[in-house]
Image (tube, rainbow, N blue to C red):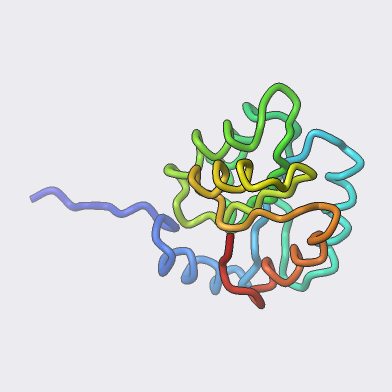
Length: 147
């Protein structure tokens, strides 16, 4: 009889077990085409206890590879990227990392963009100009999922 091995961290309960063994650190991957915005997001994330930035990218190809490799709990994802958009990343990665929460940040906060991103798997869609502060409450677990 062949033993069936389950990959660790593929289900929410497995991820919780893995995180509790590692001092409950929250892993975040940052995707934005502007290095200055990635730095600003990193500053914000470093203010949240228990958060580790596990990678960053400015284009869809690098983002997809990094997200699939790191399997973070959260992805902060700018809509407009170098050579593509958040939709490219969501369509390629979301189904392969279903336990990851994707938070799209954008200056293009119109309803068509919101619908397209949530349909592709974004759990949050935040306007950079008016909802930037919500990032901390979402990642700290203080806010329920919303679109």
